[in-house]
Image 1 (cartoon, rainbow, N blue to C red):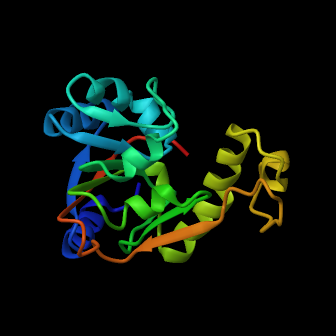
Image 2: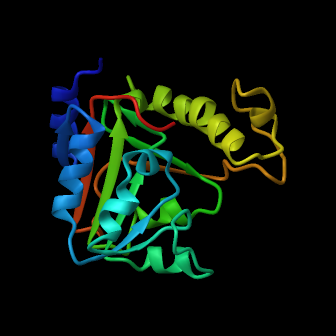
Image 3: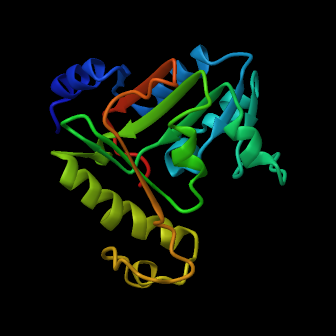
Length: 200
């Protein structure tokens, strides 16, 4: 188990508002209680899906998610313009860096600017000892699993073992973001640490 006390201290020093929960169910209840009457954008995320956050938040917010039940052609644009944005991460270093990899770029862009609040939701399985290992995890664990989930014709999807830094037109690893500190354009950026494995 990573040292969550130390990680909380580092993330807080870096400008993030940190919340810790023993279970994903407790985390989901907290998020549901604290986001109310807002427009909410969701990034593509197995973590958010597994937590049932779309159904919870849709009951009392306007939620835009391209995986959601009310998907429209402009869903990603509306998500980008929402007051609040939720996503998971592909890797979180115990030294405080947050790593995300994206294909279209909409998810990583939304964590950098344009929202009143951003929420990064992180299962303990996403945490790595340092920046290099967090990046390795994002490319070699999260990337292949997401490519397989999406049915992509890429070497990582076919073999499921690692990143091949391929030139496939279906490659989903095209943009990498590293948050060293909370972006100044985001008034509040939350990191939710969950002491369970959830998502990729």
